[in-house]
Amino acid sequence: MYTQRVSDAAQMVHSDVWNRLQAPHRNRVDKLQGRIPKGQESPFGDFPADYVRPSPRMQLTSLGSLGASIVRTPRVTETETPRATLKKGSGVGGALSSRSPRKEIPIPAPPKAGAFTKRTIAGSEFRRSYDRGDLPIQITHCGTANKISWKVDIEKLDYHHYLPIFFDGIREKEDPYRFLSLEGTHNMLEKGGSKTLPVVPQLIIPIKTALNTRDPEVIAVTLKVLQKLVLSGEMIGEALVPYYRQLLPVFNLFKNSAKNLGDSMDYGQRKRMNLGELIDETLEIFEVHGGEDAFINIKYMIPTYE
Image (cartoon, rainbow, N blue to C red; front, side):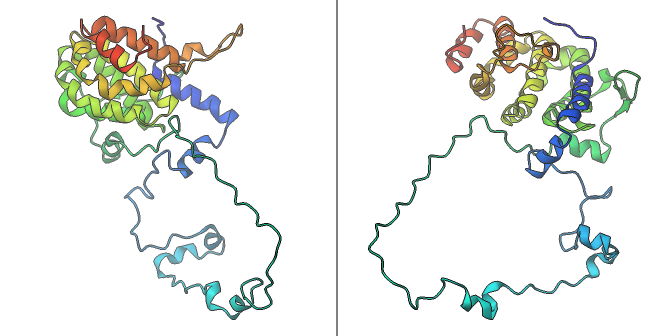
């Protein structure tokens, strides 16, 4: 397996810097479409529902400081004005019957199933816990790549409480949440030892939620975390076998999502973001470390696996 010096979390930060050059407003578009959860409106939380948020026009005219004291007059709709009765084509007077054949109404095409469409990413428990200051972590800014600084020893953490929270944050696409959750997950898996195995049932729902986003970037990150989870201790691969029905349907969906470059070269293969190859690697690790029943269960959910 390919080994890298830069961690996955730091590599995602470097990729974001490069992606801003090609698509500067990519994250803004995702946030407007609801794919990324919006942050709080102020450091103290969201404004009340009855608060009038100043528009850009109000801010330019220095009315934004008035806030909730502004009284909005109800806008008169078009149906209440006299001009609504004079609208062309709205009356029945002078209408003539025509003998020309009626135009056929076009039949709409069947809608797309949307199996590969990105789903809305809801706010994670990691985001809420970090905003409240409940997590013993902070970012250490270094020269080449950022690192995570733990305020307590990782061995002293309660894995039943913290590890599911960190796993719930791997579906985040914004920093610092994505960097901290991904880097913290890898650090806890490296030093977890025997403390990781009892927590496996609590990790299934966060992993399934991340896979069901259908976002290639989030799925690639989740697959790398799954590989690290299985290799982090003994019997973890066998403990995941009963949960294949929750995890493998998305594997079967994106299994053939491999790049066909012909005789070209993929210069970004060091990032390991090719879903087809990652899924094959993950399934092989599941088979090797999942015991004697792993292959039968994988074959049941993914018939094309060999």
